[in-house]
Amino acid sequence: MSPTAHPTILVIGKSGQLARVLQAESAFWPYHVTCIGRDICDLSGPNAAILEALAPYKTACAVINAAAYTQVDKAEDEPDLAMQINGHAPGVIAGFCQRLNIPLIHISTDYVFNGRGRNGSGRTAYRPSDPTAPMNAYGLSKRAGEKAVMAYAGGAVLRASWLFDGYGDNFFTKMIELAKTRSELSIVSDQIGRPVDTTSLAKACFSVVSNHSHSIYHIACNGAETSWAGFAKAIFRAAPPAVLPDIAVTNIAAKDYKTKAVRPAYSVLDNRKFQQDYQTRLPDWRDMIDLAWQQYLTVHPS
Image (cartoon, rainbow, N blue to C red; front, side, top):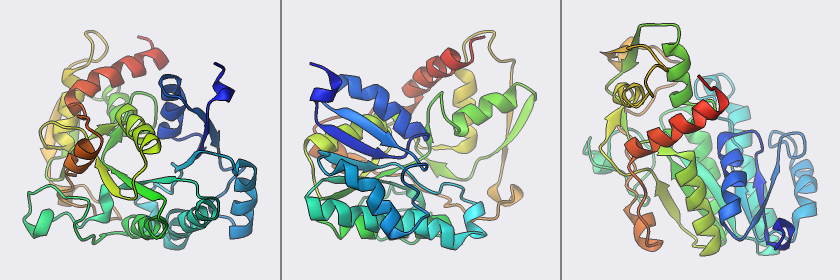
């Protein structure tokens, strides 16, 4: 059967790391993925223009909104733009999907939480139902988008944390590029989370399309909680021989690494609801680092 014979999933967002992986992973699912980028659907534009861009896809079996304003620090200077793209535009998309009864999956973030853990405990993973309290303009805009999507009975939100792979612009690839020119890196060690790879997030998207639920899910890999410094050390430990020299990682406190936007100190996401509802188990993030290295070396052969 040709790909075009499969039901079409419309992905809003074309150049981002998740959109690329959704296209690649669709080969293993009974769907055809069509991605549209900013040149076709500019979420910073007027509502009418967004609806006009979506109009040709009225027969889509689902819509995945993978587009977002993701520059966390810059959002402090551009809160209105971040809110338009992350907060208001998802509501326009949800309205389009609601009129046509099309399931909508919206990608969100751990930054909708305040970093104090479940019930303010400090070190207990957040459940999807826990109260949100964003700490920065980016988090506020993403929470507004969640609310707009969940107002539609056919909407679902997938919150992802510390997203990485070997292809896109993310912490994994940034660490490797920095390590090529430095022998020591100073990385924040008191912000705690649990990463997820784009392949696992893409598979979760397809699972929700296949058995849609009006719900919020947390998509984070299993495995031990870690800091950004711990994440970096794991990346370097997994480096194939001769690819990178020995890299020393020095732990530093977040207060010593100044950023315009405040980040949550603890943003571990509890993924049990997704695993239970979809009878699956997300992989250990440390195992997925090996896959990310394979991806990286296909693009940057040593």
